Amino acid sequence: MFFGLVKGEVGAKGRRKAIRSVLVVEDEPLVAFDNEHVLEMAGYRVAATVDEYTHAVSVIEDENVDLVIADVTLHGERTGIDLARFASGRGVSVLFVTGACPVDAQEVALGCLAKPYAPRDLLAAVAVVDALLRGKTLPRFPEGLHLFGDVG
Image (cartoon, rainbow, N blue to C red; front, side, top):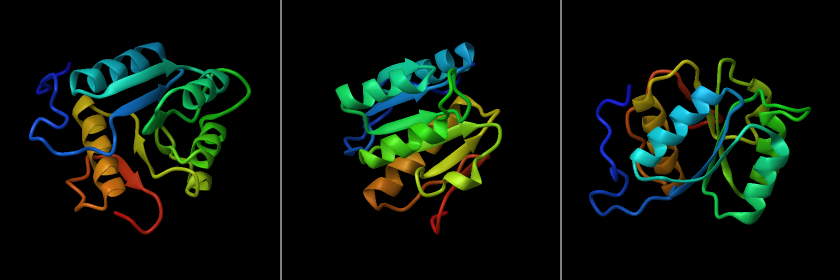
């Protein structure tokens, strides 16, 4: 399932990346595990993988997180949109990964990768976000990625 991934791909050509540490916030255990595995195999540091708002907030407060990859639906009363509001208030970028991209959350997230997606699409979406954050030319968008605002 993880074809074409080589451990340590991130920064393999000596390029400085804006995204090194990622927080995965996902309520589906298998999706959460797959996302964590794919990101780690590609050389990202996964700060944590959690399924609810309160735990995610504590990770953002205690860890150096560059990007939150969050589903909109989470365990508990708070949603991924609530989390995106918190994270963006702390200067942490958010990419939603969800079946229905929330159009009402454009001011608190960079974009959305629609489920279902392949592991390579998740990595490609993170590469697009990284390029966006560094002000570089955006690479090819994976299928299902939509950036909010005037970008992309």
